[in-house]
Length: 588
Picture 1: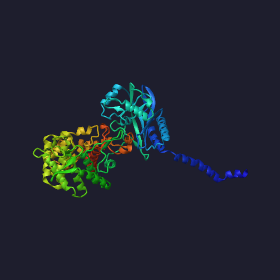
Picture 2: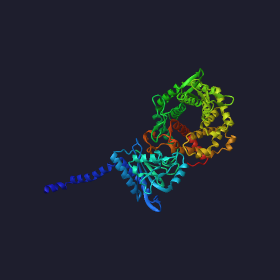
Picture 3: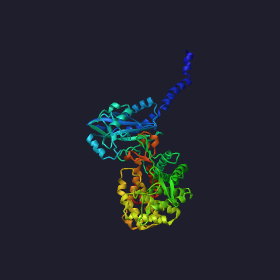
Picture 4: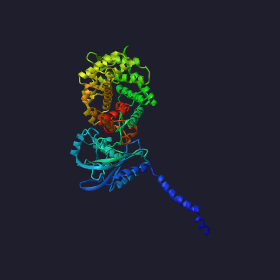
């Protein structure tokens, strides 16, 4: 016995005890799940609202409500919510629900988002209808609770990404709400539309796959996306790269792209459009020019081949791009093909498509009234008979821009002369009223070679009369940044070569630059960050693209191309933009 007691008194026994105790603690710390690590990081942010946002309604304190959304990147996020007397208690209660689900389903919590309710107001069905009347489709930015205790409640992102509201009927979409609740196993929470709802907003935080925390905007227009300190060239270059990667993921073996998606239910858009195909290839070539990213080359080559396969000779010196699904020749298709092919030849230092560009430019001339400066828009295929004199205003600017680009590469004067005639037509017919990015592109290109003061003034007028609309537009309106940046190039050349231009005395320089910076930032509200993607049916597929919210979150290839093209010029000229901004007292 004494020998045994002496054994237990030996130092290594004490070391063993210490190892067991502290080793056990280390094991406990190391055993935290990915969800627990994210939850701990998010809780630190949520508990800061201990005194600031205690919720009251009907003159009674209700404490705090916290929502936790978890997503595995492959499926729509699962959302849990709970209340508590303190933010910590509410968070812990919601986290316990999420943890039970994760353990039961062996669920991978790749992304986690926490929202704490900070405002509530009661409305009846009539008031809700009025609010929906005042909202664009998918533009309602409040969460909705169907009862005072928040037993049945949805975040704004859940509501819009699951079609829980009918913007047509200006009411709750009963069928979709019941269906969504069934997927959550809560079918009994909603049996009928209540007489009163509780609209709420939240303060949110997002935790990514690397456990990095992002605070989210809570103001109405920016609601739900991560806060950024400065929308500079580095940030935008990063976002462009993500959207270009999205386009690369859409590439098909035949050289086409997946045309687009409606992401709420992951529905692919089944049609195709050769103009938008060409525009997409053009933006990829311009991205190569900006970055030198050689990974783009195979995608560019394949998609150019598809474009070339859809070009036919009508005569020896005239070619048209064919929209085969509708048997049409569109003026805009010839134009975009020229822009794409010229950009390719300039950036890859080849003359491979020069003869084809000449034939396509001749095709545009064949559709032009060179006396008036107007164009015929659409022909039938295969007989090339006239079909529509006018279809859409964009074709005019596209064609004029393309003629000027054909001149820049071939130096054939007839193309520049025709483009000049078209600009005269734009001036005569007040084309500034169309807020058209292609008009801005075309005037910018023409004035590089023909800096006529009337043309330069029209280039500024084209944006000046539209600045208020462009600044205040509450949608993505992806072409507006292109209008601004094409006009910036005109403005910059004027300041360098024509500083005494009379129109400058009436041009609102400061507002112009404020609008550029504002649109560059505002468009990020339509970028699919992970905290946005997680609420749609296939989050990983749509990540880093841009959507058109009011058109059912549409994501077409041309939506991406327009955003990319505007941002490319923003990045290219950012240093100059900064200098001008400082000159005009714009603080950023």
